[in-house]
Every structure is written in structure tokens, then in C-alpha cells.
Length: 620
Image (cartoon, rainbow, N blue to C red; front, side, top):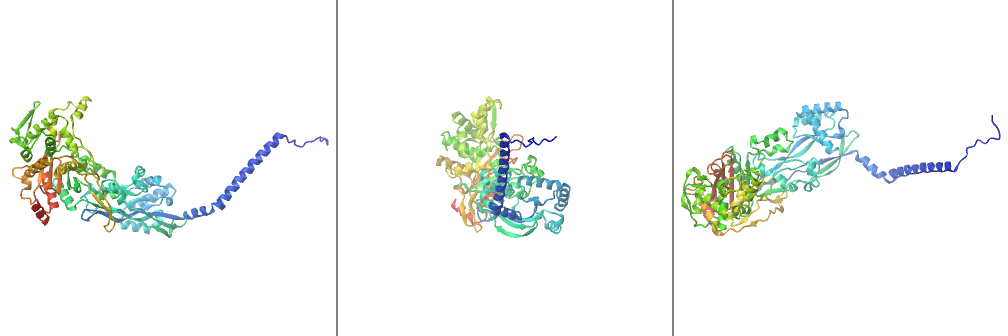
């Protein structure tokens, strides 16, 4: 029952008032935040967001820059570019329904003659790395396929055709190991300082001079800004930033020398390599490896099957550059090093006589000359002329007994057994065996014996554990030919613009000086000149040759394989302008295979029937 005297009004306690005040303050603060945020977006940032909204109607299409040309020392183009059509896919225009997308991939696969899974994989990988950029599905697409896609655009949403530049190697397999290959840059490469400013999807040098001089050959990409409608259809071009082509690169290579070397080497159908260089300055005139490969294959994505074929030992590993990566015993071509070491250390003089009865026994093992020859008591000039092994067996033991690793030290001084610094990636250093090295292996139980006199015998004649390559042997012979300068081999001469004007000269690494006396130099040069005459080891190869040549044969034993053939030539004698080092795996005697290759290279460089040969003959 209601009693008029009752007071039912809510009593507001101090605690309740405090709570109401706090809640009201929070609500007011939230309202203020929302208000000021809206004011900031609409008033202060309105112009910026309007611009971004407008940008949503603009697509930026990258215009890839063409790479610079590569020319030989005479300006003949050896590598350039060509235009091609590439089918690309815009990720933002792809169907979202998985079934519709799969049907699109299937239709596109039939047109491009490729698998739907391949398309799916390329799109997935590219969009993961660069979500909003067009994905290249196939490059170098035929015109029929392009016309079909353009005529049926409604059935291929998001598909576009772009004109791109592809690298062109018009010489095919000729010079492939020199020029190298290109390919799309990877995520790991993007982290390297040498690729600063390069975008994912760009093509960069992967090997050869394409890699070594990539910063010059690679141009600067441009971009085209295109206005599109709500569904991405182009409505017109807004602006264009033109690409800047890469700079041209002039090499020291003589195309005639390169061609002669590879053709001569390839005629035997055996693996091998050659290097031709100027002993006065280290300019590489030619460098080749057999078997070779066609670098045009790498201008487009390479299948796993193709890559396995190019790297398989069953196919003789065509991608391997044997001129700088092949590691072999050098046979008697190493006798030049043994001669320098023993003459400069005082063990040998031009008049020293060593007797050769046809064999030499050490530690119960008998070492013999090739084909059982016996040359009697002779000096070093005659020993080099006929390549007397017994003479050098005895000399090697004397050098080993003297101590100090004189053969090994001189080998390293002359550039054997370590990288020589050529402007090509992938160079391998090789190995010069020493007593300390073998004794350490023996102590670690990695070999069955310590160093012995037999190892010195092998090293003196370029056998056993020695590992070198044609480039190193060319450098060593060049150092003797020029009187003691160990040159740094280099391919790059200068960077040029499109009109052939010099922008920058390539500076090779510094040369080293080693002390080779005129007596040592002249004794060796005379002996190697005699080796191309009379009963010398390569006389039959160079008889009637119009220019005087000095040269040394070599035949190296490789366990489990046929003998390795070697030859190093210098011409014109006595002041060479070219040194050629050649080797042929399983080629037998050096005079049978390697020397004829060197002869063909000399013919190309000197001009076998031309005025140059006559002038050099008179000068010699």
C-alpha cells in the first residue's frame, strides 16, 4: 500500500557519482578521437587520399631496358638483342573462383602449348614474390598465338601481350663460355650490393662477361603509366618514362682467333680447352672450351631436363669452362717451370750436362723416357728440344734434395696453382703438391705414404698430383716470354656508348714482377724454338710455317682415362706477341692433337698467307 510519506527517490552516493563521471569522460574522449580522426582524413589528408584513389585507376607497366652489345677488339658484334612477344598475366584481373581460374589456365595452356600446372606454378611463385606485377607466362610466343589471344580477349581475362628484349647470341656455341648467360634475378641476388636498384623479374648476367660486366651491360628500366577502367581495361597512356639502354662492352677477343680455336678443338670430338693471350699486356685474344653450348637457350626459362643435360658428366659437362675450371696434370709443359726454378736457384746452367741412359731408378721404381728413347749426355737446351724425361727426373730429385720447395715456389710465382684474376667468374686455382701437404695427409691417414723422391720426379715432369689449366700455363709461359712480368689476364677493354665512343677503360689487376735472368729466358726460348725444328717434338707440326715459333709439347697421365695432350706455343720467336695454351682430354701425345690446335690459332692471328705474317717473319 502506498503511503504518501514514503520517499522512493534514488539516493546518489559519492561512489555512484564518481562512476558516472568516469563513464561520461570515457565516452566524451572516444567521441573526440573519432571526430578528430574524421576531420584529419577529410580535411587534412583529403588531397592525398584523392590522389591515391586516382592512382587506383592507373597501371604502371615496366619497360625493360635492352642490354648493351658485346663486340670484339675490332668492333664486330658478338652479342646483341632482339625483340620478342611475351604473354603476361595481370594478377589483379584473374578470376577468384578456383574452377573458373583452372578453366582459364587450361585454355591458355592449349594456345601456348604448355601444361596448365606450369602456368599455375609460375603465377603462384611470381605473385608470392611480387604480388601486383604482371607475370610472364611464356616468352618468344609465335604471332599466330598472339593474334588468337587478342581476337578472343573476353575468353582470356587478365592476359596481355608485351614486346620485350631478348638477348641474342648470333655466334651460337662460339664463345659461349666467354659471353656466359643471363637469367631472372633471384631473391638472394636482390640482397647483394651489386644489384642495387634491380627489380624482381629483371634479367641479369649469370655467368661469363655477362655476369662480370653486368653493371655496365644492364640498362635502366622505364615505365609506362596507363589509365584503366574499373575492370582494368586500358583507356589511354598518361605518361612514359623511357628506358635507358645498357652500355656496350668491347672485349680484347679477336673473333678470328676465337673461331679458329673452337673449330680446331671441336674437330677431335674430345673435351678440351684453349687460351690465347698477348704476353705483353695480358689481353685475352681467345678462350674456349669443348664441348660448348648455345647460350640462346638461357634467354628463356630452362627446363630441369635441359640443365641436367648441360651439366651431366655423361655429356662431358658442356657448361664447364675447362680453360679456367679444368684441373689437370700438365705433362712436359711444366718443364719450363722446372727449368726456371733450377736455373734461378743455381742448380742448372746452360752448360750443365746430365746423362740419360734411357731410364732412371729411384726407390726401386724405374722411370723411362717415352717410347724407350735414350738421349745420352746432354744440356738443358737439347733436353727441352726433345723433351727428355730422364734429364728432368734427375733434375727434379736434385731440386728436392736442395730443399726449400724451389719447384713449387716458382710454380706459384709464375701463376700456377692459384687463381690468376681473370675477369670471369668461376675460376679455379688448382694445386701444386708440396712435401708439407702430402706429409700432413699421411699424418691424418688420408693417404698411404708421405712425400718421397718419386713425388719430386712426377712434379718435375708435370705428372702426379699437380693440377693446373690452360690459362695458368699461358700466364707462366708469357712471364718467360716477356722477361719476368706475370700479367693479369683480362677480356674487357673498354665500355662504350652506342656510337663507339669510350666511356670508361677497363683497368686490369696489377702485374707482378719476378726475377728471371736474361740467360734463363734466352736459354728456354732458344730450346723451345728448336723444339719446332729438326728432330724437335713438334717439328712435324710446324715445318714450313711462315713465322718462327717456340713451343712445348706435353703428355700427362690421368689414371682411368687416356693421356692428356698439351701444347703451349709462342710466336713470333724471339719476341712473342701471342701465347697459346691448348689441352685435349684423352688426346694422346701433345704433338698429335694439342699442337695442331695451337697451329690453327696462330694461323688465324698471324695471317697465314697475309702481309702480317711476312712482316712478322722479317721482324723475327
